[in-house]
Image (tube, rainbow, N blue to C red):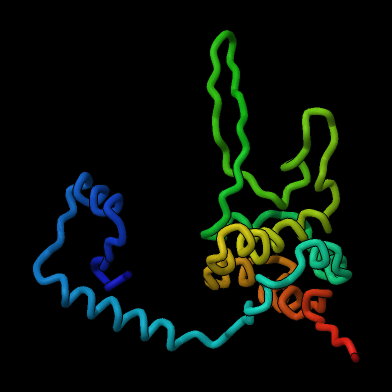
Length: 196
């Protein structure tokens, strides 16, 4: 955590402890005071949160039903596929592998990329499974808010920083996408009763 002229860090794993040790960073003084200050700063930061998004029903939503939901077209309408949302997101990791050749030598490079770009999923055959804007917008939100939940059962892949909302040139809001997905009625939401 940013403490002004220095940072407080809490080591959560042996790998993290080894990293800090290798970097030459050792715990300074009484670490219980640091833990108390981190907890205090965390509580103060959480107290400033003014927006809340319900995600409680996402895990139980039927993935295919959400994928075929009618709201994707409206949500994607204004998107210009600029990729700003993905480049500012702390949980995005899309990349591309490219070979750069010069004469008889070359290197293979891993480059930062975006799932919002039309060429991102283009196959060598020319087929593109996400060739339309609506498919790319749906993939972005389904990955962050549904596929990740289904695969890891550890919450959504959004830290709530708001960078994508603030910097989107056409005002697409991940909170709206989440609300549409969380409240979308799927057959799994409905119960049936049998009269006997």
